[in-house]
Image (cartoon, rainbow, N blue to C red; front, side):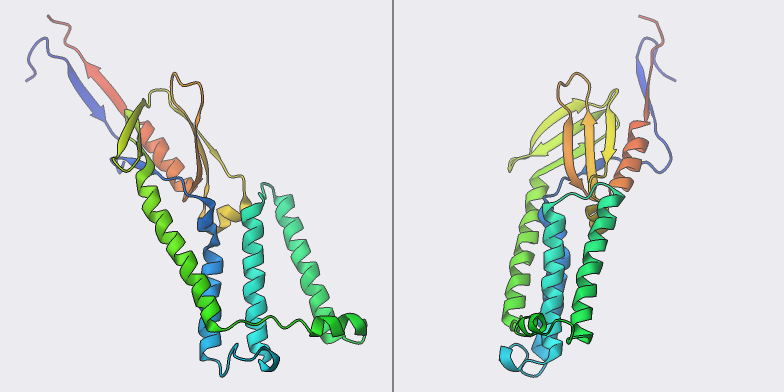
Length: 244
């Protein structure tokens, strides 16, 4: 039985609610993982292929195709990194351009007599690389990914039922904000970035702050939003007996 005059605090939480929700903003370099995978695959295929990449003038069509596929994936990856595709129209335009390029390439491949001079020029383009090139590229990206994973451990946000915490710096500096009347907005500004890592932007509006907190490239944005909604729905009830 509670003592008279003692204020009691009762926290009611929904079933299955986690203790904290961690929000980690990532740099855009994490979206280069398709190029990392493509480099590993291309390096492996070139390494096991007889004389793969050893002599560009005598390489087989398989090695040339592997090189072209890697360059295509890398180019598309850089386009995604350099531009935002916020609407379905941009997505449709991108696929339209890809379809046109592939269509022209197939046309010149199966109907070389249409434009002989252009076909002769394109025939001289034989981009090939040896396995060392692909593995060095993949290794550099891999080291960059490791550095990113270490860096984000020193800059992340933690949302509890009653407070928003910003962990930053090598010495784990801590900044606290109240979650009372905290407003959260979710934005998905790039269709491709969402498809690659389900990422998006979270905008937090803490009470009594002039500027919002913008968290770019939060992975698993939909799950984070649901977890935030569950966390912020926690009810803190203070019971006072009214006696002195």
